[in-house]
Image (cartoon, rainbow, N blue to C red; front, top):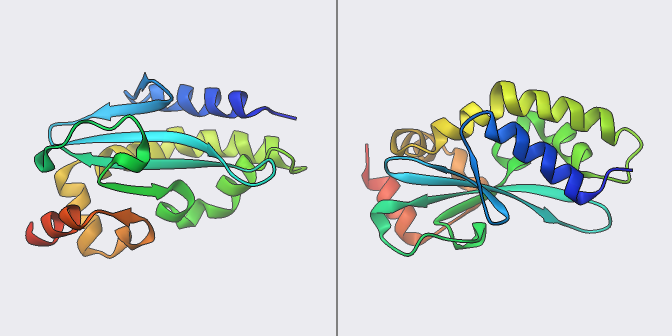
Length: 152
């Protein structure tokens, strides 16, 4: 059975291939207007979740050291519902098919999801996702909603 540390290590290694860098317990990708953060969180039982946050530089607070301090944060399987089943299975370290789901998850993370996270981590990407209703599956500060709603 895989450990939570092994789960994180593989995930973080895949993100490093796309320019993310480790900062504390998170992976960071700084951009011109945003910082994209990715981390893991232990849930119930042996379930681990992948969380991501977007911190907007324009809103001018101290850079976060936890995803929950960012202006917007989501669980990965909610932001990418087309991959929900195997993302959750990959994080269920007690599941029988966990290892094969994890390997598939890492491939899709490298090939598709990381690039999409990079695009979402731009002002244009976040504004487009907001207006398309894609960001209703997570938590957003009032200031972030107002900023994205006023930007076209």
